[in-house]
Length: 146
Image (tube, rainbow, N blue to C red; front, side, top):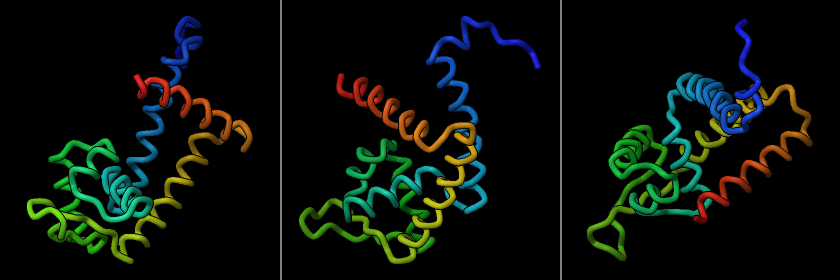
């Protein structure tokens, strides 16, 4: 294996970027095996946690572009994982809600992602994993509040 300059390996930004490549590969492979995409998981998770929502609201919450939300919701409707109906309080808007099959798919995807986390963070103890997650969350929150 080629040696990596210490200047790089001493920079958290470089390490995070390199690790993100591995994380994306593992997540993509897991979702593909389950016939899902990351957008699907995000939407199902948001609906489970916050309840029915408009497509625009899902896009904001899940950080998914509006056109991608429409495509993902269309696919989730086809699969029977969500329902889409006119919003009774706003005539020009659709409301998306989680179905029982969608809740089951979310449970399957949660299990899959738990395995991905285990594979990705294998060299870390449970305590180290919690610390890493807390610290990454703190840094992300700081930059998002700007």
